[in-house]
Each structure stands twice: as C-alpha cells, then as structure tokens.
Length: 66
Image 1 (cartoon, rainbow, N blue to C red):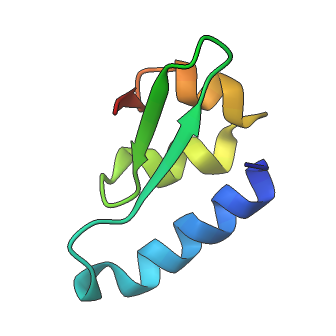
Image 2 (image 1 turned 90 degrees about the vertical axis):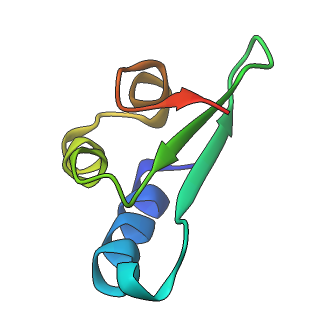
C-alpha cells in the first residue's frame, strides 16, 4: 500500500469514524508478519501524515500484530 493511499484512508476515517465499527489498514511484511494500523486510534492518522513510507510506519509503535 502506498503512503498516498494510506493518507486518503486516514482522511476518510477522520470524516466517517462514527459510521464504522472499525477502520483498519493491514500490511504484510517481508517476513510474512501481518501488521495493522487502527485508523480510529487518534495517534495513527498523525503518524500516517508524517510517515516517509508504509514499511517504517508498520514496523513502528503505532502498528500492532494482526
């Protein structure tokens, strides 16, 4: 997933968060680990906006194992 798409999903989540039970982005890393970004968590959209790439974002502390 590209950072641009993830930023679009974060913007969508910010606008429509009350309408959904969950809004998540799941990424599969090179070692087949699945990591999830919970876009309803207030710190995740901020991290998405400042991220250089998805890999560093998914390996950071805002993502959790899926």
